[in-house]
Length: 89
Image 1: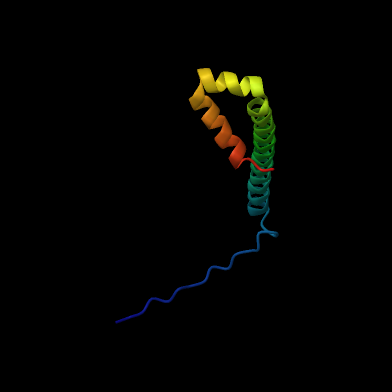
Image 2: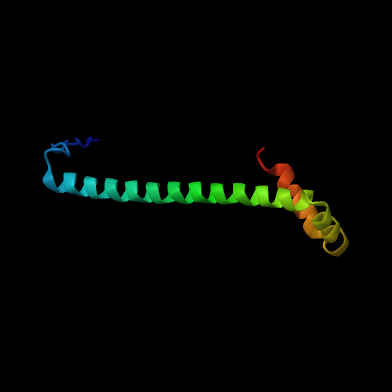
């Protein structure tokens, strides 16, 4: 049986090939923009969640509001309490 001989095609490095370099730089810029977008989005969501957890803590530690929630909406009070228990201190 004859074996096939793989011939290596000589390729120029991406730095020397103008089309490949342009394509790689375009893709890199696109990925960088996406990363920046999602990083900012994550940062904003984290800050919002932290603000909400402080607000909820303030609500359930105010005696009048806690009494109202306990009498009218006990399931919401339970959910708020769970949020506060799982929130970072």
